Length: 295
Image 1 (tube, rainbow, N blue to C red):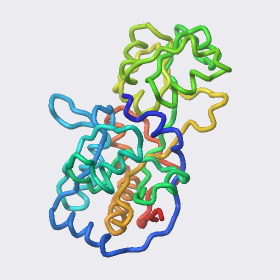
Image 2: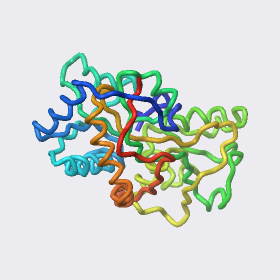
Image 3: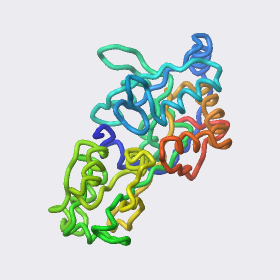
């Protein structure tokens, strides 16, 4: 999927810090959720294994997390499956703090939001909370084609697939002073790239572990290995993901963070990831019972 492109993924990694104070708007936001008995959660559409439709039903890791979160808050979930805009700033504006100019309102919380100190400091209208996953770039490769211990140099002569306009794409086009570029094959999504790997059309795929493993859905062929490879010149190959709420909704953020912390601690988050065949990696800093607002 090309919705989480380089503009959204490049600076993701570490949990932000800051200080927030409760406000009347904050209290009202939580009271509104409780009064309605509904938690509206925004997730990206057509984004397996995190949020997608299968036979007309909503499925995915983020959808299951949203449903579990709503249950623990004693409210019902309404899932908004959103399309991605040009960048993360637009997504947050349209779905969390302002709303799209065409209407539709905003959600109470958004899933799959970045947790990066530098980015968070620049976005003063959003509170980034509850980091629940550490995403990592990996390679899925055919060991029968390139052996069991390949390096980036292998892809100067063996074709490698990548989703267009992603961090993996930008890296491979520049890797080893551009020597890998002639063997890079572009696809519209990680799903299409993995399908090409299965058919033997390429030797490997580079992408986020969750997306790569999710496509295989626990059915990895014997000849395929999924693992991290050393990536010379790439300063960051992992990033934390969590939730986002409007900056002054501190009480709502606190309640969400409390429940998400419990879900991580009691193994619920891990079990949901496992159900979709995705390796769960907890972030360096897990959710806490209270949260810090970005100011």
